[in-house]
Image 1: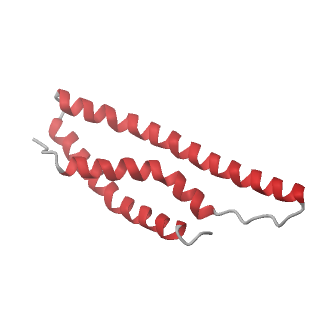
Image 2: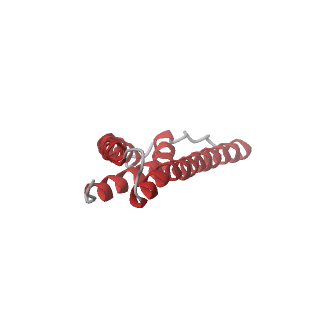
Image 3: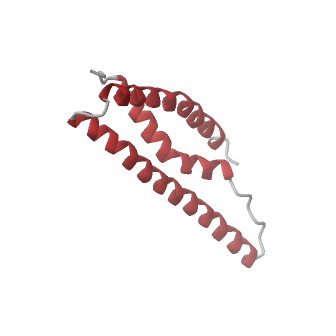
Amino acid sequence: MTRRSSPRLARQAAELAIAVPQVMAHRLTRMALAGAQPNARDRREFHGMGQEKVVAMWQSGFAMSLGMMQASQKAWLAMLTGTRVPMVDTQRILSQALAPVHRKATSNAKRLARTRLR
């Protein structure tokens, strides 16, 4: 574990804990106000909601897979050369995996905070 990865993961989790409810509140209010006939702006926002989640989850899964693959390669190389097998820095891997979700949620919170509902 590196000294930098632990505070980074904690900061990401804390910022997500703040950003996610803000985004959800804004979007649920927007859905309620839009009703059965959302305007073009609302339709773009609602479509983007689903699309951004798929992209962020793919990016997150890819980042975690890449981190685990790199850790596995280091372990195999250490075993083959007879050196000490390094510990897996799980907090770094989790931080890398959380980064795309964190980036999207916090950017949405900032963007939607500037947006008027009606």
